[in-house]
Image (spheres, rainbow, N blue to C red):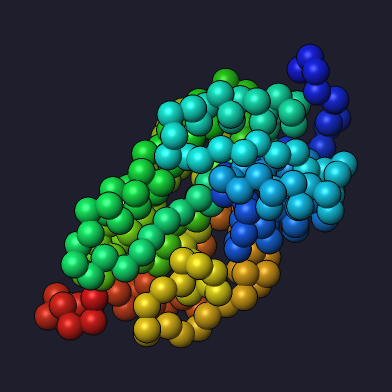
Length: 249
């Protein structure tokens, strides 16, 4: 049903990308809009949202908000109204920083973005899709979710939370017999502000990472590694003995 005050977007697929001002999220929005999807984008920096909207004025709508605040759902509902519906929600907001001395502020902010903001928005989207009868949720977690890391413990732990939660939603959708696809995206190093640390390798440009993510979502994959060869690292980390992990983690 068309919402009062917003133009009808017709029958085209509607996508919301939480965290679209830069990096992977911005590239994803560009891909979806370029392929004719109707895209809702969010972020804290309104000028960056508007600059992207100007490139695709017929396909992109914006809603500026910070996922660490207490008003996520009203913003999300407004964006759904602007799109006149929702088919795919991508949670791409993320934060992480080096916490060598276990900085409490870094740890808390990481959790606020990667756990609290994530669960509020994704939980709402899942129930929205349950009522609708179909939909898809994707989340950009991380290869860091596989094991703990001493330099950024909250980051690896929060990404593990996201990955495990997404698997739980995948199981829940199957048990409920609902047509809700759930995709856990685990990138390695991508050339964005989150790629920190000295031992970086296989660094992918955001454009390449975003295209692989787009294709994984389109294929409704349960889990995907970005770039694809990072599945090797995921397997190595999973089975790495503790004595070796303690030397490199």
